[in-house]
Structures are given as C-alpha cells and as structure tokens.
Length: 381
Image 1 (tube, helix red, strand yellow):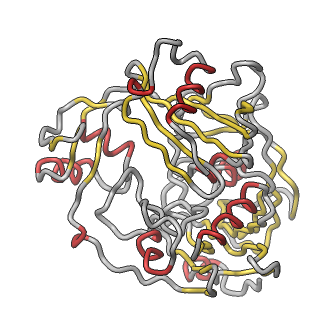
Image 2 (cartoon, rainbow, N blue to C red):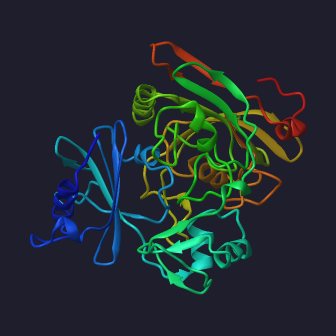
Image 3 (cartoon, helix red, strand yellow):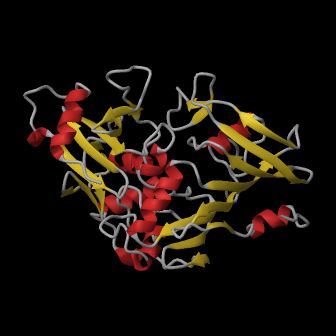
C-alpha cells in the first residue's frame, strides 16, 4: 500500500494543520513507511511533529498492531467532520492522525524516556560522549543538549556490542516461524537502537518481508519483559495475511500470569473501560470514560501468596491485562508500573490460535517458564 506526499498534504489541510498556501516541500522530516496492508507516516509542521496511519483495516483498537512502538502519550486528533470519532474516512480507507508531545528535555533524559528504558541514564551519557548519538544529523556529545520529539535523534552504536540470541523455535514452515520469546528481549528496535540484538535481527535471515526497515518479519509484538509465543512472517504474502487477522481480531491469544494474592472469583469476565492516566500519561487506569476493554480470567492454582491465572483478552488495549489485574487488587508479580518489581514480569504469552496461509487453523503453545513452575510445581495445563 502506498501514500504520496501530496496525499499527506491533503490530510494536513483536512485536519487544518496547513492552509492552501502550504506545499509538500514544507512538510519537514517527512517519513512514509509503506506496508502490505497499511501505511504509517511522520512529518513536522510549525515545529509540531505529527503521525498518521492509513489502512482499510484500521479501527480504534488495531492501530497499536500497526504502530507497535507508538508512544503512550500521543494525542489522537478527532475526525474533523465528526468530533465523536477518531477514525476519518479518506480515499476509500480509514485514517488516524495524532501529534506527539513537545516536551524539551536534556538529551540523556530524552534517550532514557524515548528509547530503551532498560539502559540506565549513566549508560546513555557514555554513549553520548562516545559519539554514538546524532541530533538533526550531527553528532552530539553534550548530555545537557535540550531536545524534543521535533528533533531528529538517532542512535549509532557499534553492532559488535550485541550478543547473538538463542531463541527457541516452536514451529517453522515456508510462511511463518513461531518462537518462544525469552523475557528481556526486545521484539524490535525502538527508535533505531542497535546496541542489542532483537527478535527482528534474529528474523532477518529467515524472512523476505520488511528487509528494508528495522522490523523484518515482525507482524505483532510482545513487551520486552513478557515471554512467550511470537509469530514471525517469512514472506510478504504471509505478513499481509497475519496483519489482517490481527487487525480483525481473528487471532486468539492466551496468557498465563502469576498475580499477587487470591482473587475473589475462580473465573469471571472483567468488563472495565481503560483510559490514559491524566497525571502519568505513559500509564493507564480503569476509567468509566475510557475505551471498552474485556478480559476473561480463570484461576488455575494458588499458594500462600500468589495465584496462577489464565488471561484471555477479548480486546487489545494498551497495558490491558496489567491494568485489569491491578484494579482487582491482584497486580501481576514483577509489574514495576502497576505493582512491585521482582526478578521478572510474571506474564507469559502461553498460546496463540491462528489460520495459516493454506487455510489450516493451528494452535501454538510456549512452555511455562521455570520461574512460574517454582511457585506452582504441581500445576497441570
């Protein structure tokens, strides 16, 4: 799928971001990222950075699958013709436009918040002083330089600082590869980081899809701290098919989690809307004015302190499982945001059900990690 710079200018005028005298040459830092079934793009107008997603599959839930590393605190712009909607019909497809926050920060603080939060601020300072960071195309060695999302910040850390990944393969054929992602491994680079190997790096030699970008083979993601089943596409046809299944929510995912305490019910459906937290915009909370969110849970085992639960999300809101369990008073063990830190986040993508390109429905599972079994040695799944 393609989207031209002229079409993006029409979109900017539709949303009243630009007037009739504005030209395509004035769209600063324009980046258009075409995919098989959708297009993402970024641009700057009057020192404000904007982004958009364009696809016939786009709705108010699927956009996170199409732009997995979209910052949590972006502001989605409403339909200019319908203030109650965030999706805008455009050229026979659906469109979503958003702007990025304009917070100025020291460069080392910016890198810590916008790139990889598992790299300490002192480590980022070393990378800056070593000349590994570029601001607006030039090497910047001052940690105190103030930048924002309007600035072009790029990371160029030597590849030899990365270690090879040992990733267990659950299933592989000519169209897909299914892996058991270890906790602590990034699905793909965030903002061009190259100081560690990612699943996307591992997939690069196993796929013909997305080789011109930093997400080869990637059609969905798991957070760094979440382990479990992850599906990669080995060719463009398979990628298009899987992306459509994810966007239409035809793929069913089941997670296992260790949560604090004991739940009041053995099994139930949580139907609680979720919205961004107004005081901490990178996090979320249950809010009656939020977006609809449903999670089915079932308690599988308990011990003195914890419960092992099966979680089946019916919707795909950001942080949905973590927010719902924390709201019940049973946060996931190791959740540094909604609970308390531990040796790891005890959230595991256990099972995924999908339809292969040949039409066969298949279920893939990833064995429960040893850390989970230590707490529940007698559990049978």
